[in-house]
Image (cartoon, rainbow, N blue to C red; front, side):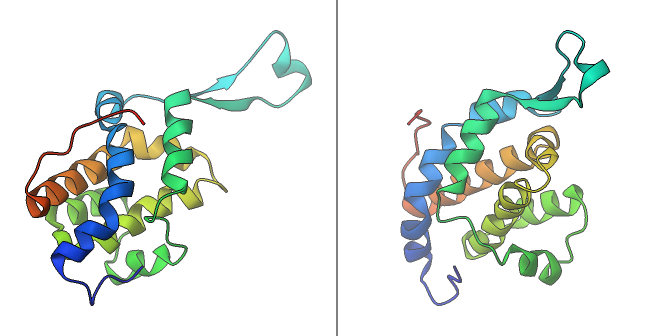
Length: 158
């Protein structure tokens, strides 16, 4: 979006509603960190006559669908990656860890990368869970919003 001209409070106000929707997935994302959230369907004899296809955890698909409808989606996420020299998920995690409320656009860019690029290469959706990027992103967003908002955000399934 480009929140550079907004005050810290306006940034929180802009992102809060959509962030709270995603916070409902935080406990699940934290519990699945390092675990596979997809597998390949290999029903009876399918390997002999067809190509195996991936099957994704239903919670992951709900999270992706929900995230895709938020204000965090930015088709220009590639600029976040080039501007911050992000190459690996470790680079992403370092950026997330150091983020302040003024960096919410960077956090949105990382989320956009996984959700939007995942439409072309769906393995990215699972990779975001396995590497802990989603959990780190949402955890940092929650921490920043709670700090600037002055109240605790409850995890509720919407």
